[in-house]
Image (cartoon, rainbow, N blue to C red):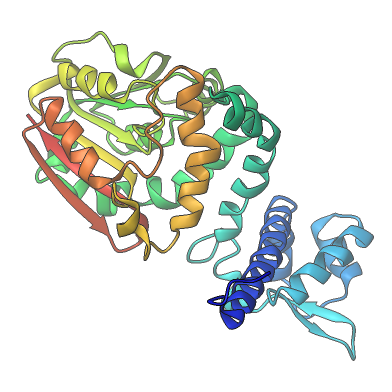
Length: 355
């Protein structure tokens, strides 16, 4: 029996919003498939075409392509012309679905199936505690590297380095740089190629990430960059670097306070710590208007928080927030912390910290 205050209109609106979520979740999975199979790149180069022509262009099975196109048409991603039974990817859509466009959001959709693969293990964590370790996430470093290429690596020279006055000139003369939590090493590899007089290093806990970084650096013939498997909370170096960076790496550490203290110790007295981390508040009520709030909280739940807890860590999570970030940086000995936002990157806050 419904309460007398039950609002039927509100209930129906919520029900419809759930149907919308269900449909969009399905489209997200199909977008990920389209990206991985090269379908968007193929369609961007074609006029309105049949499913057979599209499949041939992408080198794929036509029956699978045709069913995928059904999702794309009903999801309003691809246009369909029934009189000719042809499909077309609008140029305005291709701008956000291919690497040649403004930003490839189809690449970001890969997180949906990756996170879905650990649902059974997360259910156990809900019941018993603990966490899901890095090893349970196939392709995670590959997808993160792709995301980093679009947001961080692409903006290093043009937007991020200028956040620190005089940094470009120092890099050109030659300084010592360390990236903690370097993942696949894309940032340090890019800087090592751009500033041959400086010396670069990258530390990460992941065998997979460091192996990928080593292979790429060697393939490019870079001799001024090195990568090591090392615990971020136990760098074990003192006053060794002029610049230390962390890109999207603090919040999923087992011991983030230890990491910040270790970085503070490894930084020279006049050095700079440059951080990129998820934008948001430490208070959930202040994130109601966050453009991708539900997505980031879910990524945190299904990866960032749980991988930290898997190693008996603090489990900060991706939405630890700017307030807590500044507080922890201060506690680690960074007395001057400034926050920056970049026009092209609504996902992240950039911090410049000095002692």
